[in-house]
Amino acid sequence: MLVMWTQAQRRSRPLKAVDKYRIRRRHPPPSTIWDGEQTVYCLKTTSRLALRQLYDVTRYPSTAAKRNLAAQTGLTMTQVHCLVFALHVISRLIVIVAGQYRGLTV
Image 1: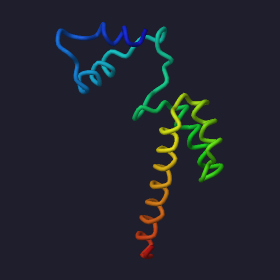
Image 2: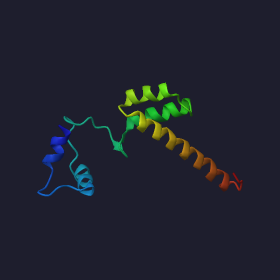
Image 3: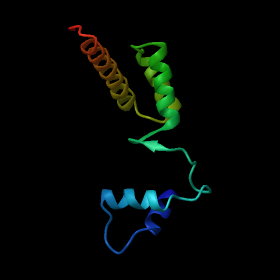
């Protein structure tokens, strides 16, 4: 249904990424065909929250835990692996920036 809604908003020419973004912002789909959950960088809010909770519990989740999270959120194992890796990089950068701010070298 959501695809049909997007196609109905099309103009006469094929849509580019910017056009699709503008249509989604100006004409959000009705709540009858959309769950209403916001998607940021292709990740729904509940998926992002579940990933953060898993990372808070264990910084290095096992393959089984990643598989379980993938099944729970509807993401692929590759997406979960890359997102956990990205959280490691972000947390490492936060530590480095905080150390530089205090005048420490890391």
